[in-house]
Image 1 (cartoon, rainbow, N blue to C red):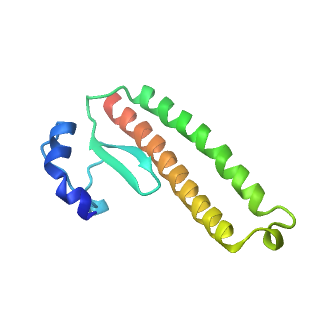
Image 2 (image 1 turned 180 degrees about the horizontal axis):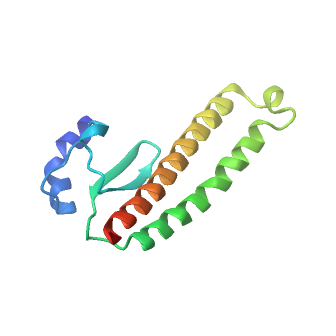
Image 3 (image 1 turned 45 degrees about the horizontal axis):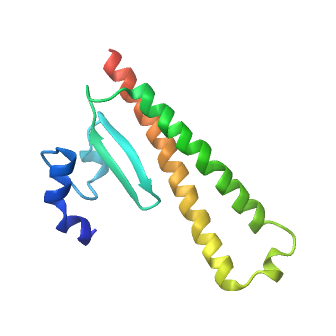
Length: 126
């Protein structure tokens, strides 16, 4: 967060934004905001009304979901495999747990983004 705060002017310029809020209160975020997932710790919310093709963005997020889901499934399969607990060292176990948590968060964020874009598309068609 401190690193982002130091780069607010650059983010505004690159994003052609009038304002940048870091970790805003959920209640202050307008309904017309779209979500772009950068990684398991970073997501970008931007007012997209009239700026994008929501169906195209939904397809992009669905593709990201399609790529992330098998990675999570494979990691879950590895962790639950017979002999995993006995044969894998603790450092790798911890790394796998952290990676799995990150994948779950990323997938949840992507799913949230898909639903959000669907809502935005419905609002724009009204």
